Image 1 (tube, rainbow, N blue to C red):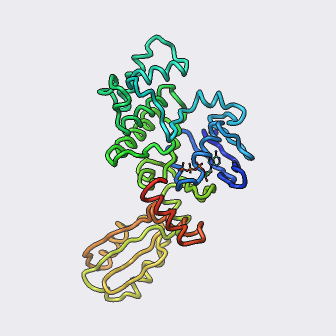
Image 2 (tube, rainbow, N blue to C red):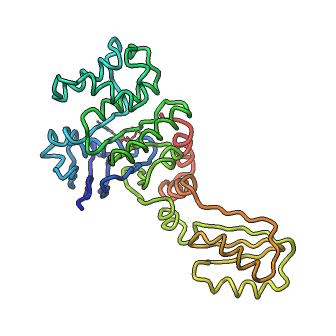
Image 3 (tube, rainbow, N blue to C red):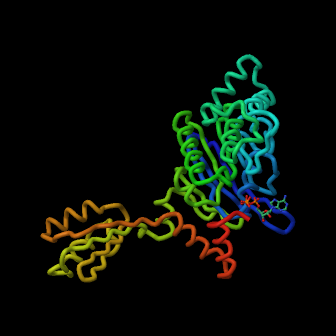
Amino acid sequence: MEPIIDLRDLSKCYGSHTAVDKLSLQISRGEIFGLLGPNGAGKTTSILMMLGLTEPDSGTARVCGLDATRDAIAIKRKVGYMPDNLGFYPQLTGLENLVYIARLNGQPEKGIKHHANAILELVGLKEDTAKLVSKYSRGMKQRLGLAEVLIKKPELIILDEPTLGIDPTGVKEFLELISSLQKEQGLTVLLSSHHLHHVQQVCHRVGIFVKGKLLATGNLQTLAAELFGDSGLHTYIQLTAPPADAEQLKAEFTSWPEINSLDIQANTLSFNTSENITPKLIRKLIDLGENIQAASQKQYGLDEIYQKYFEHTTNSTLENENIKRRVFFGRK
Ligand SMILES: Nc1ncnc2c1ncn2[C@@H]1O[C@H](COP(=O)(O)OP(=O)(O)OP(=O)(O)O)[C@@H](O)[C@H]1O
């Protein structure tokens, strides 16, 4: 099946500055994809090119089977876009704002309020439909923004920094909402963020975007494998006593194809593996007569992956640190 988003060598320069550099990316229907990158990485510029709102200098963007440059209006009908700076009419209620948007989208007048109310209930604003938007919290505004996106029954929704400025509980609830919408309605979601943990919670795949370049895409495990070789997984097993014959134990385990290495220090065994085989390791050790005191495992997460990419892409340590600080602690 044709990808719902298909970008090939998409580039955009502002003067001498390359904002997006040969971006190629395919996103399948039904996926939640996270575009992850620091401020200024080129996420918004890429989204604007997908929507036909900014023209690329080179390359192609096909969205919902349409050419973004030639068919921008048709794309607008099929794609719900929530920008990072939401704008509403503050002196209208949530319901009035949504009905207004529905009318702008050409929805028939009959049943328009009923439909708008149903969408407001879906996004968790049932109790707040009659409240003025000027009295809405940031999290409520994000939900209303999502309602405005959903009311046009899009095939694809694109959310630019949807968790910006919401408190941690609000973020969790908002991401759960996105995830349940994807499951219930089979929606495809592209969201951009510079918050690692938010993306990690909800996305099937992520793309790491730095200085206009998409450095890698995949789920956590494939990104870890790409970055750390096959050594993304570690299992630590503590025995009650050092093994009687450490060399024999090493010879036994290093013949397993999933095991990259085994380090034995006193009574601690550190396995580096390409798959999660902790239960299998424990069973084998028991068979070999070893007594197990404790076992733990670690998988590299986005934090490590992200930091690793930064280490590779910036020359100056200071610049690197500044970018990391912005990524982890704030926006601008
Ligand atoms: N209209 C414009 N004119 C000139 N430069 C621009 C314009 N829009 C974006 N840029 C530059 O292009 C680069 C990419 O910006 P973009 O907004 O796409 O990044 P972003 O990843 O979305 O960042 P943020 O999270 O801060 O919104 C930045 O260096 C930005 O300053």
